[in-house]
Length: 321
Image 1 (cartoon, rainbow, N blue to C red):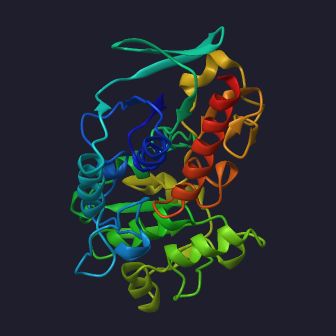
Image 2: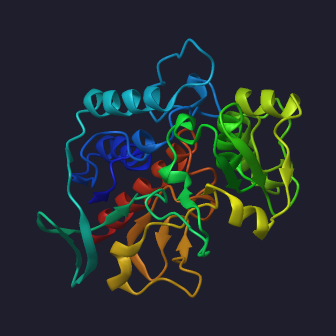
């Protein structure tokens, strides 16, 4: 059973199919593309198309530099068709629990049993929202779509990562913008893109964070070099005067469906060996970030982790037969 039909789930199906294993994919969304259909309108990838591909089939070229989110959605939808991936959607998984030699996956459309479960639900569906009592409107990255909505308004964007920088750059020509970060923004070298980040993470020498927090995609680079994209320290007074505050404060793994297994530690993480849950070796977590595989939350990075996951499942099933 693969829970989640986004990029991580599709990468898993490529190797499951190659291994000759039967599988079912359940996805809560009514359409292909995982989280990509829900991003803001100007969202672009960090890498050109050929460096943003899932296993087996390169992403088609994008003529205008870094691909848009819609280009990614189209690619993921075509990937499903190319490899004849049958995704049951929309199906909401409510829980995964033990049942002897199998795991039971309970959904809003009935129950399933599986020898192994790959959880690939990502993080987009669990945004981290600071709790502050402010008079203005409060949004998260997941709620932001278009700068026109904020034309002429006082807007504060909080967050020193990629989302914060991209949304701040998007808003600059339209709103009275303040960009707040806990520390001065750390831009990666301009030549760094998603492919380079994957290579760095794959070598496992240090971490990509040593190079900075923000990939300088063209709109961010232009706003930075113009001198208009300037971050300021956190200021409660400015927050209180804003018409809107956009919290680009990150995400947490969407693991609520795994609660009955009682595997999460005090930090909300599940201890893993590679992608396999140490407390439940029939459960595998794919695509949640560095703790489940180097660069595994990226299009280009999830493939190697998916391959290793399916190899481990195949070995476990062979040992039982």
